[in-house]
Image (cartoon, rainbow, N blue to C red; front, side, top):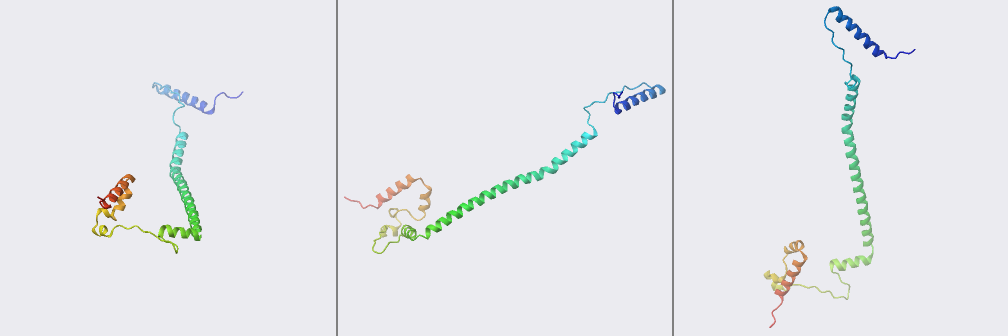
Length: 171
């Protein structure tokens, strides 16, 4: 017939019996034996908790570095993709500049070139108004920066005012 109790339980019972005999022999009152609770922290549990905490502390920094590096890699890939797109745009622009018709169109638009036999017209302000620095001569060089910052309707009204002031009075 197998034993119903484990070895640890039998040893505890023998220890309690021995303690009772010692107290009876000395004549002192016996302390009650308190049963051991299951919720007490054992040495193994404390060691396990210590190992888990050490692992968490040891792995926290490398994990943070790993996540940061993954984010940097994603940023670098995005920048590389943008650079590839920009290179492709520049290749397309270079190919356009190889076309003589495109070059002619750009020269006419940007540099005001004309073909032989064509007449070019350029509008200039009256020389007297420009020399005096009148407002009738149009906006000054520093005003172009301000015009870019102002709303379009303010520029429109300024243009109308300048045109009205530059027009000769008819009677």
